[in-house]
Amino acid sequence: MHLEMVKECLEKVRQRNPLVHHITNVVVTNFTANGLLALGASPVMAYAKQEVAEMARIAGALVLNIGTLNETEVEAMLIAGRSANEQGVPVVLDPVGAGATQYRTQTARMIMEQVNISLIRGNAAEIAHVLGEKWEIKGVDAGQGDQDVSVLAQKAAKQWGTTIVITGKEDVITDGERIFRIGNGHPMLTKVTGTGCLLTSVIGSFMAVEQDALVAGAAALVCYGVAAEKAAGKAADEGPGSFQIQFLNELYKMDGADVLQMGQLNW
Ligand code: ATP
Ligand code: TZP
Ligand code: MG
Ligand code: MG
Image (spheres, rainbow, N blue to C red):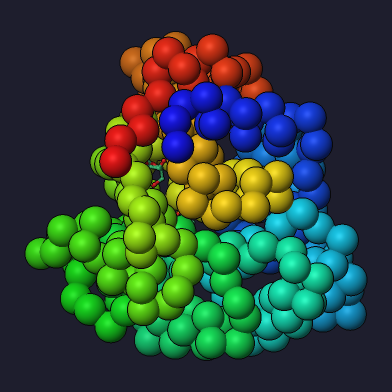
């Protein structure tokens, strides 16, 4: 995998404009939809159990995000997930806040048992807690942990037989065999809510156009981090409000040349 492949994936997203079905949280819905439109994907949020199977079936990817979960929504996630599986539509899970409450941890595990998940993206605390390991967590934010993040990601990928992304200052992606570390990103991303959730949806958009989840995920991480760096160059001094707007602009404007010039993809 090299930066040329990242560039190709980005171009495929923009050419194909994939439909990405979301069952996500109420905090990030608008930001996520705008982020995907800016990037070049086509977001749809659909939650009713009467329609989710139908919507998931026609989508290029399904994103399940438990950020503000409740019983009705979880039921819809299982219906949508099974329908996506039947149709070969990739399913991405963001276990937001797993470890903060038992309900979140158990729900993430239950979804993983009943739905075939192609990729899970979380912060280190969320992935650790779903695995049954310790990591400091405060609500939806990760604190400190003892483990090496790469070791944690590989353990999770092997145990669950899926691709794992753990984000933070450095991002790690692994399918248990191959592993990449992505150095792009900017601390301003931690000052805007939903940047982790939007990232999961951007990964879903890439998975809709690239079958290899590891390649799609790594490409999405590079593009997202490069857009954040470009946005920070324009707005970091002004604060999170301006950064958020510039970030949407850069998801729209960033291109293959930026990827080749700024991408930090290591293995
Ligand atoms: P948390 O709630 O712990 O912040 P999250 O779900 O918001 O987790 P993050 O880990 O913050 O997800 O990842 C979102 C994006 O922010 C990723 O692209 C990641 O690379 C980037 N990011 C997070 N922290 C930093 C940092 N200190 N420096 C640079 N980029 C960062
Ligand atoms: N509370 C429940 S979901 C949510 C908050 C603040 C958004 C979390 O978004 P992210 O992307 O994990 O920071
Ligand atoms: Mg964050
Ligand atoms: Mg998150």
